[in-house]
Image (cartoon, rainbow, N blue to C red; front, side, top):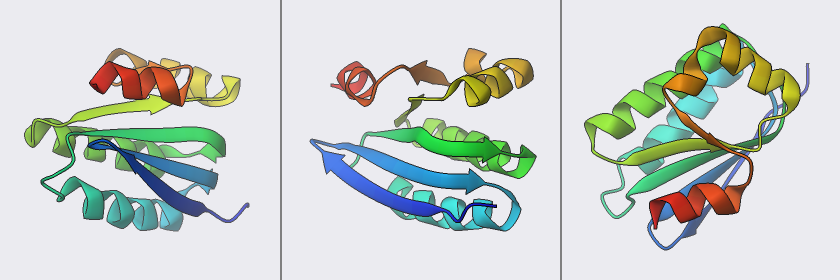
Length: 115
């Protein structure tokens, strides 16, 4: 299992969170706390989770992403994903999250969507 690394960048009022590694079980809680710290920032209007370096995600990782999406909606903030590898895209497709959460090929497309 590959360790997880989290970083963020704020551009205008949009926060991109970069996730690297496997998004599984206990690491999902770390992501949940990290995302929550930004969701509570009243100056931010949208969030992009950059999944370009996520190699594997399990059900707990999916749950954290969906919970963050629901919280963003509750706060009337935008939320999207970008740069999913083919395996992740297939996984999101199988569980139907691609019909609920917007997914973009690039970070630039995701950010432009919220400008």
